[in-house]
Image 1 (cartoon, rainbow, N blue to C red):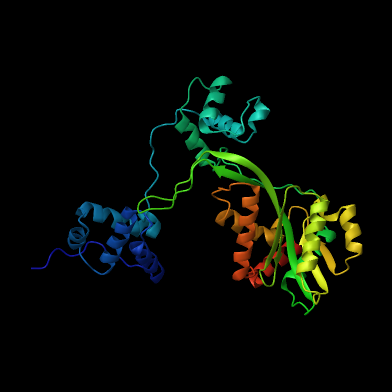
Image 2: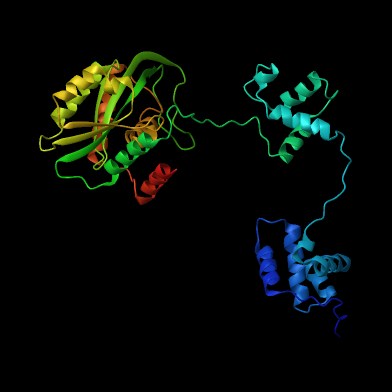
Length: 368
């Protein structure tokens, strides 16, 4: 015997059908919405209310309810409608005070704080007499409604120099150095210094990993001094040249340039040096040295654009792979191990992948 006939004639458009099928398969939308989409799709197939109720394990009244909602408002009718809820305890004026405090720096209100959090804003409301009491969660809900998170911060750099034609020309020059084919007598070296590398001696030896236990590193250490690593990265081959110094002056930088002059074959008649604008790189002594070494050509990165210097990428590799766990017997031991790291890097040296995507990104900066 057949069951009762269907009470609702559900006709869905192809667009609605696609939307409902997408909702039915979704794993990110609310489960209730997925079930409602399944109800409408089953009814559209001509299945009775009782059979849909059995398949979805819902009562006939619930199935009828969502069928009526869909017939009245389409797919939007399957969404939950806003509910009245408890009447607000605090009026709009209190909410405006909360938003105003969140949009001000604490120092401006005489508070010795770096940034606001919900607890401090609640205390400020009570201190200034706006309210006699308020919970931290109430403050959080009001801030969330305005997408305000004053407890978070993001670092940014103000422009020391304008992004003018000189800046664009400098960036274009670096783009040309990094991407154009080089002549047989040219090379491009990215040069910088990693300063104040600490030679720390742990009071106990580092223990290797064992099953279920990570590498163990003693927290306490003895200071054995610090070194500065001057390094040059060949942007085409990935080869690294490096030397360690106790100080960082023009004297040490010139000594490093002398080292490069000896190491790089004489067949290379143009050595392009990419470096930043610190005084050590363009002081009087350096300028005088360059006058007698014509194959060295300096190119300076714009202010606040150290990320355009590829040696910075290599320094990050050194920090991750060799300096995360500092354990050196002395400054001499630190120097030997840094030199060994450079030697082993050069055994399988490779250039960094600055491809067309990178180039287009740099060109967009110039266009702005």
